[in-house]
Length: 446
Image 1 (cartoon, one colour):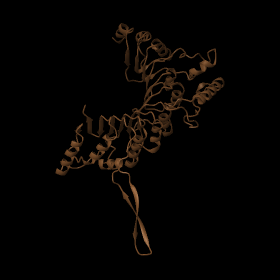
Image 2 (cartoon, one colour):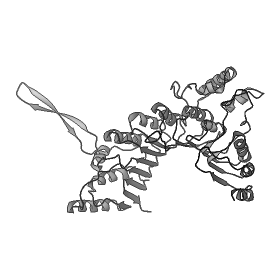
Image 3 (tube, helix red, strand yellow):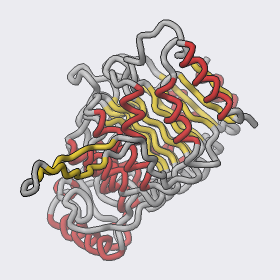
Image 4 (cartoon, helix red, strand yellow):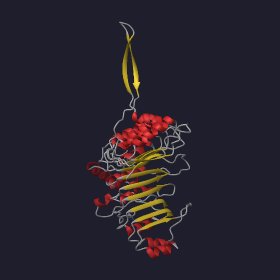
């Protein structure tokens, strides 16, 4: 049935999502289907899931649609190998340079030499135990790549991916990192913090001209003396080693999970893209200290002028902050005031008082449209009903936000702690259309 459908629609097919069975070892794509897939000259989106496909077959499939393909997703796809020789070396010689593919003992021609995915803007990879380990080098074939989506549940060569993106993908705008299911890691697989921060910082920071020339020279020298395997494991200036500054960030969208809460170092990595970031989605796998996390959220909101959509998600089983705590952290900036109390004509003592009166700190993102703080508060109150005072305050609050519709599942709990926080947030931008604090949602009416 699948093959007949492919044959009937091969020359007009725009999207193909082909999913195999979840088993090990992976099954090969049926031969009859393969032959048809090699001639889909109108294909714009290709997604292969749970298949084994050889290098030769994948090369021929991609060659057949390289003039039209815009989205490529290889999810749990095994069997193929990407050459480790960067295409940039082709321009350094009039004759093809030999290379060693992983596991090969003899030099051979690069089977990918004629694959040019210049229209591909989105690449998705599921880096699990079945995915080819060299899939991280696919961006070398996509010079106009703008978006990379990763689902990772095993150790992968993310350093190689970072170097590949920096050298060959100068138009990167979006990165998504999702921790996949892992039998070895309770909360999913995460790389070492240094590598993870480098992925966030450097994925959209192209090499500057000096770095590019130096890197190309090093690659040429290494290629002539050894295999590319040794090259790809060598630190790169401006990346993990942090020796250089590299080019200006082009990242607009970041969708990531933090394993250990939102600390200062993780926030610093995000703020590398402060000048360009428009969409930010952060999932927090561990609670961390309330004051630390909320302060880092404030840093982000005060440092990223182009933000339009912001979403911070915790886990309902792990988060036990009260809205009173969150409200005070957002609105209160403790100030220390010395006070002198005379004890006698000749002696005095100085005491210190701390004020925690709410003092709003303006955000930088005047064009903000959507703000979410979700699953942060499992402990939201113990009252079964609103008191008369609370109900009156809530009614006054609703009057102040008449341009907004209120969806609130927590009206049986004390809502007063949310009111100032909501009012503070909606005062930050006239462009705001939606604010969500857990299950309380404000949506601006048309």
